[in-house]
Image 1 (cartoon, rainbow, N blue to C red):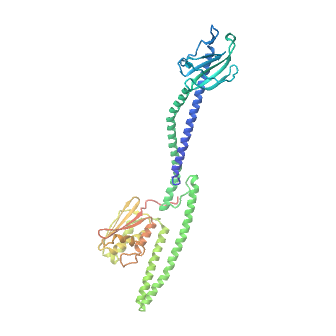
Image 2 (cartoon, helix red, strand yellow; image 1 turned 135 degrees about the horizontal axis):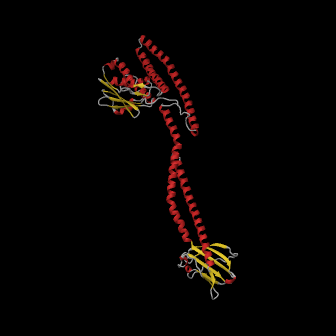
Image 3 (tube, rainbow, N blue to C red; image 1 turned 30 degrees about the horizontal axis):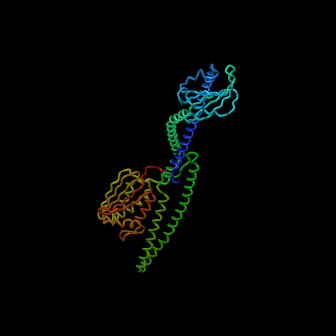
Length: 452
């Protein structure tokens, strides 16, 4: 349950609440309808009881008889559903519908003209709704106390209530579906600000924004303020850490320069082997310091900036043509005009410079450089016609200090990868036919950094 989305939780809770509310309301409406039908039935039974009482007369033989029966034909149909019964002076009169059955009226005492409502068994065992009235006959009819009752089959009432429910269920289901859909729409609209917060946090992660900002609904304003406060605190901590790293790297440069001077003094004294050892160690340390400085510089700038790819590559190629390795290569550059990446030009030059230098070092006669935009990113492809490297050595080549031959410190590709990762990019190597292909993927400069 904890992994369910907030939207799904609210939707499920709303659907359950709506379903229960519609179910309870439907049952309540059915109960109200049943009560209304019963009241109407009792009102009709009371009218029919009046007709029964009005039709009682004394027969010539002195017995009571019903001269005018109610007009409803169900009173005359055996077990027809409507029944009347009269008890007076030990005599019982009943409707033809009862046949030989006598309604078991309870032995209660009623005042003159009082009415009681009973639930009694019918001639076929079915439940009856009965209304009973006690009256005193006039002197011309003997002046005896008389109990008269009219009853109807409750099955008809139950059938009416069931029919009402059958008619109500489709409308209740339609209403429930409409309310659930309306609740889903309400949840979607209500949670939309959270989606906006997520998008802004994604913009912060990718470098398109610095802060969430305050133009959010009041309910999520505390969350946005806390996130912005956290970002500010982290920026201060990272800035202090980067400053310390930069100071440390710069502080190491002076001792390293002193070591290089000491190596020159040793060589001047004729101790070439010792000088070479010192220079090798100092050179490796300087390469590592340069790498840390590059990582610190890129991390501080991040994706702030815009670098024109064609201008950067053109500058790098001009420099490489002046080197011995670059002068012997045929440089084939095919770059679209106006293609730019979200990076500082210096950082892009350092990352591409390492790849271009590596391609020129291993190429036999040709180096190709191309690029194309793809899905909000720029894919830069460098390909040389050198001997290449086996596929199983590609990952090892990208590791710190690894190199394909004995030339160089082996840190160029690792530094290029560090810069690419800091810019939310990737570097991949793969064998070509012939040579090696390097792909540098970086975000396109398609947005402007904002502080919101």
